[in-house]
Length: 266
Image (cartoon, rainbow, N blue to C red; front, side, top):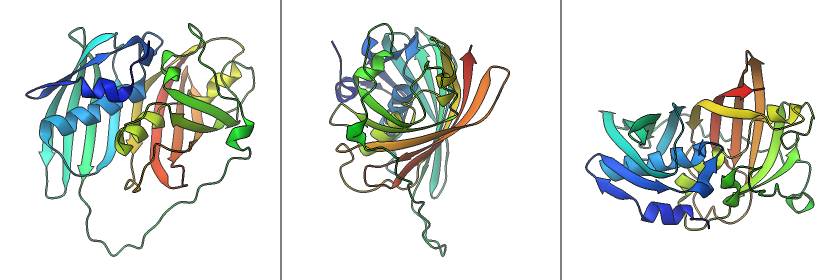
């Protein structure tokens, strides 16, 4: 049985500065919950508790420990509220143990004399309909793949023994009824690190920290169509890799810029 993200959000409980969710097994990634899922819930908790109505500009997440199935508590605190920018701190607790730290930066639009600058997406070399989806295989692939679909057009799926440092992937959520902001945060952390393609068998990898920057969100419905995410491993040593990612909307607009430190246990 799977529980849609929209259903998990509708079942959340607000109590002062704390929002409680029920995390289900189908959102797991190994022994913890999928990081994009946890960070998306943090954004909702920040808005719930502080009534923020400004666009989300940046999000920094430190994954401190595993988040188990069951109740997960998000405790928020306003760090500073300026004329146009507010910064919010959020602690994630699982079984009364601190499991994550999130800082959100919300900023209102400002008048500027700078010209508009918008990056251009490079199309992937293969059409999405020509690529098979990475299937969900119980006890082999992460459980959250029941909610997120991915198709590799550049690079390789994990554990194929192909030495790629980059990947270009079509990605979309299977769940409906998700706001554009929550959808973008979740999908930005969807694919595994490209370096897992180097291995010929299962190897654990875990995000240590994740920084996400969000340009102004495009208008319209983002639930239909495929996003594109381009990922690059920029450095790696001592069992850690540094990587960057760009997520593009189905219409080709930049949705997010991401940077991660990932621990690789192999």
